[in-house]
Length: 172
Image (cartoon, rainbow, N blue to C red; front, top):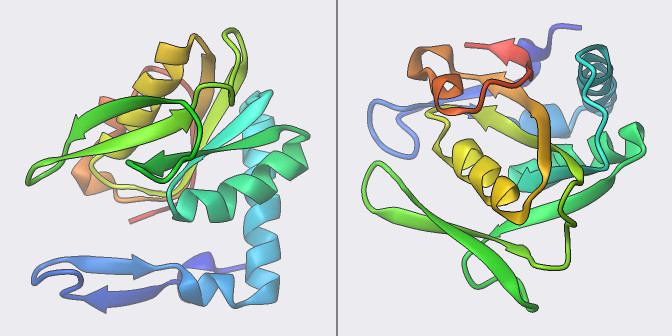
C-alpha cells in the first residue's frame, strides 16, 4: 500500500515556507489506518522493541501510540503539555525554535526499570522526542527505542536522540 498517497501535503502551514504533512487523510482511510498500525507494529517487533509501556506525546502520539501498545501487549502512557495532568507529575522544559515548552507525565505512571518505547506520528527537529526521552530516563526507565510514522530527514531530528533503534514508516 502506498501510504504517502494517503498523506495530504499542505503548503505554507502553519506559516509560510512550511510544507505540513497532514495525517488526517490517512486516519480516515480504514484500510490505510489498519495497514499503518500493522506495519508499525511489525517493524517494532522486527527491531526487537519489546516494551512494558509505549509512551506517546500529545497529541498525535496518542493516536498511534495506543494501538501500537495494544498490538505489542504493552500499556500506554500519555506525555502531556503543561497543566493537563491532574495528579503529581514529573516535568521537563525544553527549547523550541522560539521559546520553550514543558512536557509532563504522572509520577505514578511508570516505575523505575520499566522498558519504554516512545512513539509519535512524526519526527522533525527531534526536540519533543529528545525531551520525552530525557523525561522517561529521569523517572529511571529503560528506553528501548523510538517509533515514528513519518521522518522529515532534512531536519536531522534523529541526531538529537539517544543511540537506540528508530523505526519509521515514511521518509520525506
